[in-house]
Amino acid sequence: MIWNEPNNKSHWDPDIDPEWTTFGTTVIEAAKAIRAANPAVKTVLGGISPIDPFFIERLKGYGVLDHLDVIAVHGFPLDWNLWPIHDWPRKIAEIEAVAPDHEIWATEVGVGSFGAEEVQVFGVDRTAELLLGRVGRVFWYSLFDLPQHWGATTRHKEAEGSSYYRHFYMGLIREDGTPKLALEHFRAHTPAMGIMQWFHFEDPRLDEAVQWMRRLGVTHLRTGLSWADSYRPGWEAWFDRQMAALEEFETTVTFCFTPEHEGVAPHHTSPPKDPMYFADFCARMIERYAPRQVVGQQAPGQQQKAVA
Image (cartoon, rainbow, N blue to C red; front, side):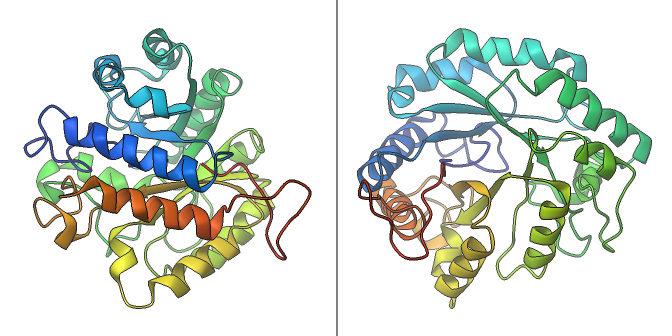
């Protein structure tokens, strides 16, 4: 997956790139680099939030869709979006209408337990009813609650009011490791429904997450490898550990987050000064974790999977 929520100001700065022309170039160059590294890997447009067909039409006009296999969408109608959960089929149809030749994946769907755990129970079951079998992949966000002391990646933090605090209640498992009411309802929808779980740099929850996903019957996972993290000391050891731990799952890996020194502005939401540097990062990650396989041969310890 190339970037995350590009039409959301928390992940791409439209003040620097108001027409998303740099974003378009960034996606095209990254997709070309990924295809050169391993043409069997699916390329996915970073999940859009809001679900906006006009944004997809803009990218289509730039030729971006010619380089992608999948269009991804994110939706949180009971927490942040201004449409009801029952509108999921309509929102999917809006994107299908402007990208009829592409698969559509729902790569982040979720309902938090901020107000009541019973709301999340309803959200899991209704989301599954509306989306499973309707789109190619569905990933529930998320397995774990975000720890309160980590902070959420948003522009205005606590000034956003309850919208900010809802970020900490999207998991099926509480910060203290105990399951919520919705966990067993989620289990009823696996393996058709996958999990989306971000892992922070050297995240202590990684092994626990693998154990929970096995117990829940999860077979496909979405997570991320941060371009910004690739400049931290010890990044290779952490990336290798993370990807080895997730080897048994069909993993959609999101490449995103600009290193401060590579951005037009010193921020992870900034467009890169040179999109080719991001493309190079994507290619190196594919070569490292989803290398091209010679027909009839398999490298020791390597398993060819549908990694996007």
